[in-house]
Image (cartoon, rainbow, N blue to C red; front, side, top):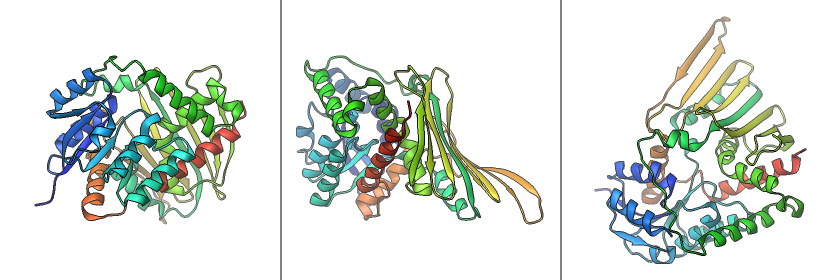
Length: 364
């Protein structure tokens, strides 16, 4: 029989409770969660009880030494992704990292080095790139004569709109160690100083813009890169005024066409996320729905005029299987059967170059 991979979870927050722990439980023929790790004792106990996990740890040093853990899932705050991933790889564990993998060049290189040093699988969780409709769009792009224009859009309501209706019932706790908040803030400051220019690093607005690119923005920019490659440059970028979390707009130069990118978070319970391609003979629109409600369809709409001048429009839904399930099936194939990983650390590092393009091009 095929082996069941034993999983250690680092970080038991919202994304763990709403997506990864339920999905891993449903994939019990491939995975078994054997250990949990979190700095909150209350959260740790809650998740251990709810998901039936016996082993719990308060720090990653303990978890990565556990011989009954094959793969470490790094679901902790962004500021800890690099240190947790490197610790797991150096302990000989395979690693799954929720996006963003890293927000600085130094951290990205540390993860790349750890993978090469230890010869383990490191898989970055860009789940939208594993959706069935995304793979179908890649195939349909081959029949587009010439791309004229692309729009990449991700304007959504706050996560709580969708999480509260997901049926996953996540909980939060505030029983963190006294130094946890100050340590995270210190790490966040270090990231800003490393990733941004000195003047940008001092501005809360600039830092908020960069963090939005690294969180919500990384989904779209990563998908854009796989579909079209890395853009030549960012022609211009701007954002809304006076917002703690700004709306961002950017124009990317791809040589033969321009890609318009826009992202932001508002107070409307709608999930407007899509990538649309306008070609000479065909239009393609890949539309995502919230990943927090399992089974919502991800679709590809195709509009075209055939050689007889007849117009047609059709919507393709390759599968109801959600993108989180699809990516975890690919992770299993990589670890057990040695299948190549498309969202590996070297791929994820390219994201930082696109972030840098946008931050450099900002006009206000």
